[in-house]
Every structure is written in structure tokens, then in C-alpha cells.
Length: 159
Image 1 (cartoon, one colour):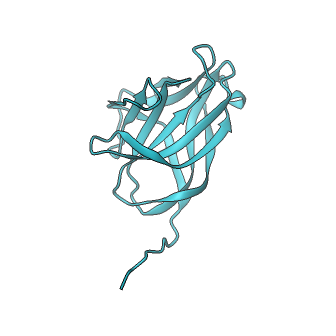
Image 2 (image 1 turned 180 degrees about the vertical axis):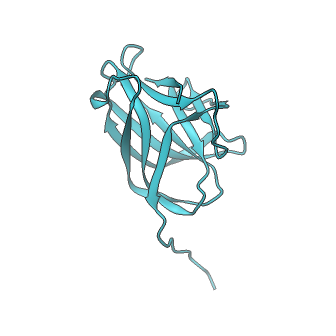
């Protein structure tokens, strides 16, 4: 990682990703730090459209206390549990979205990213200045880990 995006209020940041295996995502780990006291952070998983931009309702969500993040600019890996999670399909692109709704320009969360030599081909960084009404994409990626259960996910067959 070599840079950051900041998150507060209506300015959200995300990372699209493509799971290699079908699994139930149960948490994510994000490399974060704070400036001031940004309050509760929300993390949601969303589907993406044909252009790789987040779309639709939240598939699952979780929260963490942003006020307890480090202020060290190298960041800390923060795990955010996503409730019961949701089944993600291999080869389908999804988005991890980070929000600090009560944050301000003096109470920010920073998400570390790789901007100079991004090598993750399964997705890219996305941002919105207006709570998700419009999205921009970037040729870098946010530092993240996708955690879950790759156990059998039942399928329903109609005969």
C-alpha cells in the first residue's frame, strides 16, 4: 500500500472483488486509520452492474467503532463481521463499501490503497461523493481481505 482514500458523511469508498470460490462471506478485514473521532463505521456488500459499479440493495452489512481505530498512518487491519453473511458466487464481481456517516472533514477514516503498482485483477477501487447516487472507478485497489465459509452451499432444484 502506498496511499489512501478518505471516508466521511456522503463520501464513501469501496473495493470491487471477484471471489475465486463460491462461499458465504462472514467478515472483511480493511487496512484503516482515523483522524478525529469519526463514530460508527458501516461496511456493506453490494452487487455490481455491468460497468463494475455498486448497485442495488445491501446484501449484508456490519459495523465497527471508528473512534477506536489507530491514528498511525500505516493503519491497522480491522475485521468487520457481516452478520450472518451472504452467499457469493465464484466469478461474479461484488463490492465492499465503507461509510462513516457521522464523520466530517475533521473526523475522517482513511482506507489504505495501492495506487502505484496495483496487481489485483479481480476488481478496483470505487468512490461516491453522494451516498451512492453516482460512482467513479479507479485503477488501484484498496487493502482488503474477504473472510468466510467455503462449506457446501445448498442449491434448490425444481423437478
